[in-house]
Amino acid sequence: MAFSSSAQQEIKIEDVKNHVGDSVRLMAKIYGGKYLKSSKDSPTFLDVEGKYPNAPLTLVIWSDVRSQFKTPPEKLYNNGKVEWITGKIELYKDKPEIVIHSPDQIYDVVADPISK
Image (cartoon, rainbow, N blue to C red):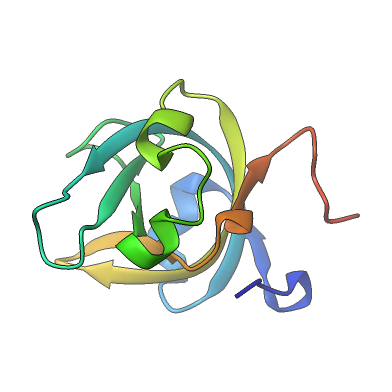
């Protein structure tokens, strides 16, 4: 499921908490994360702009979407490289997160497919 750029608001990472419920696009560093293979639905959690538990945003990738990545996401995005991230900000235990429904919600800044 791809997200349309027309419905997204471009925000800064420090404004994430002010956009809960909004579909957004933001540029941020991803510092890897954890794959919880034995947990329910085998989630992968990626830390954005900091390491857990201090990351201001978490990306959640469920097992059905994880299988769409050629490289495990926690290994692919473990170097603190800046990426574009798109999706709807939700709160889980008072912490902002974006559930990733497709690998194309995370993409390289250099290969930005959305024209300005």
